[in-house]
Image (tube, rainbow, N blue to C red; front, side, top):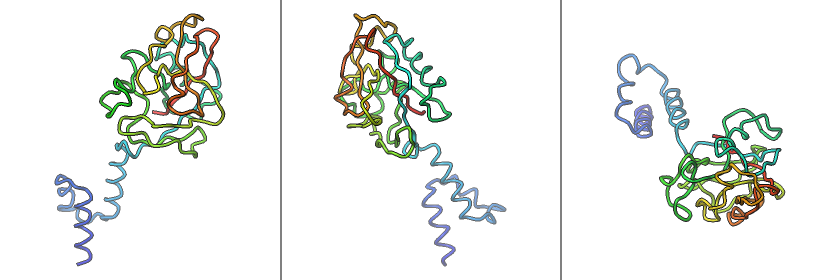
Length: 211
């Protein structure tokens, strides 16, 4: 009777009638605990909520001419002294329809995201990989976040409500003093993302997010 309960639990947890085929014929001899662990691990690897990532702030500061969003991403993936390891990174920076967190204030779903850097429901840590920043909402944003220690400026192009700011240094292609770009502070709340500085003398860092 106990064995039957184990099989019933496996079927309930898996929740798929296609899996039943794996328990017929010769497959019945496979260890059910091993099979369950393998299948759950496979499910977890594709689950957004299971994703754990981290962010880091670049060691180098840049003016507003980042080479666009793709240029900012390239800087995050370069041999930066603060980069905490291998992997692909994107800069938490937005512009036009190239990269966007929200099209409406504090968007309610990830459907508003365009090439966004945070995964909905995923956990993110600081570059030390032990200090939890928080869990992204279903829209892939944070109510507030202390990204790292100290107060470091980083380019964002974001408004305080996660929508795109009009200040983006000509789509991150100009370091001219007359062009403004919005930036954030690593120890601030979302309201700190709406700070604005000029693109020439106001050099800022990049906040890079593991994908």
